[in-house]
Length: 610
Image (cartoon, rainbow, N blue to C red; front, top):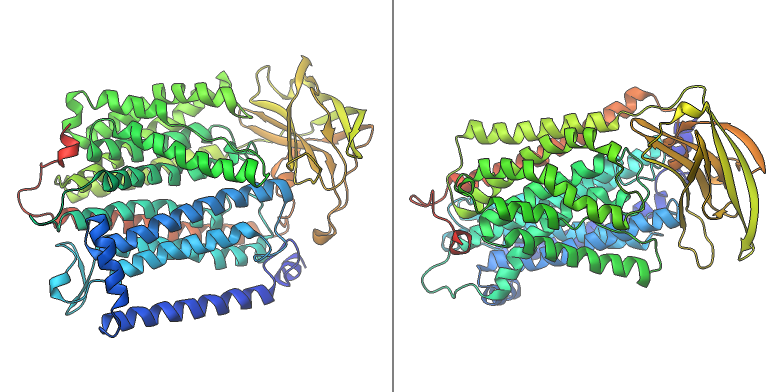
């Protein structure tokens, strides 16, 4: 019955058929126009595309098949980043979408991801004839048509991300809406966009290798674009952390340091090897600028919930210091040791910022398990950053078995850490007794303070990660759809509010408990939701309610009646697509390195010799 209801496009299911028809028709028309333009260009029946690309090449000091796609890619990835972060803020403040076309952030995401795909296809289509062969690593398509590896990988990442849209609608129709960033199909969109930043580095490298004596030297503008590319890798990987950034993490806190360490290991090590002295810090600073601009647009300008973000300055400093040692001459070892430093001292430095501004600081109890997850992941992503740096500087990679082994082991280590992080417990036969005290209404809406007692009191430890109240997806003047209050402990298992919480209107207000592996919640007030057949949970003056898995409250729209086997099949499909994308990105780096001109094995770029 549930599957049938969702398939009909209920509020908790997929997009309305009319919107699917509109999106499909628009997509088909745009795709047809772009295919026609590409065919006309390949047949030499239009010249404006080549002229535009040549003009971009002169400005960018790179071949036309690099310059125009990179310009399009930069605009697209920034558009997608803004859309992603705005979309998360809208879900936090307003709940689920009224439809794919009703959420303005979706337009930015869709245009941005489609732009990434088009940028890759543009790089593939632009080269015409043997005299425009895009470097020695180019892939032969026809007798006189060769495509750059970076363009192929970019188009593949863009296609993978776009594939997340129809799969996401199918997912919602089967399982209901999972109002979380970490839904499997959501991760496809994020991953495709994030990994596409590596393809942009590949493409720029291929263009750089075609330079001749007549090519003008790189200017400061191009150098900034190269730094921007590594900042993009850093920001692209940091998108996985956004639920922590907004203060609504739906998974255990040990994930946050692991994700920070993983992003830093890949991006900062690669930047330091390729760009030279200070590059890791510069990439981190540019990344701060990108995230800061988007955060400003989303919060003060669009009046959405505030989002913080990791700075990566501590990890960058560790990478820069280690680069002054002889380890720097052995990129993979340098990357692994840098990962060790990032996953320990680098995370401690980052924690100073996290604890100062985040809604959920890191308690001391997080460190043992957090380090056990973060350090191996950082070591392996640091080693991958070393491989990336070798590709971009023309150093010959280790034997194929070693390179493939490093990437495969990285995937396995991340998978193992993720599997551990996904494990959580819900106390059995435990309850919370709450006494609510009326507080002055805010704009006519009821607010209360709470006195809560856990039964039994030892159901949580003396030093839990958090015991807090979250109110979200509500609408209230002068409020931004989000409320967080860390309760004050007054005795064993006894906590009280520090400020009034909203318990009226459309708010969903709950008590959240995270204590080591325990991740649970108790509803305080949940607005009625006829769209999914959910009744109101009232904020009674006194109540005793069982402690339940918080995902049943935070992801209220998900259907609980779907067989676990069907969920497993869906996750496996997404996993296979993800592994295919990672294999494609790895193939691209290996092909480019394999076709480096003879004698370039140990030659660093001038900027990297600093």
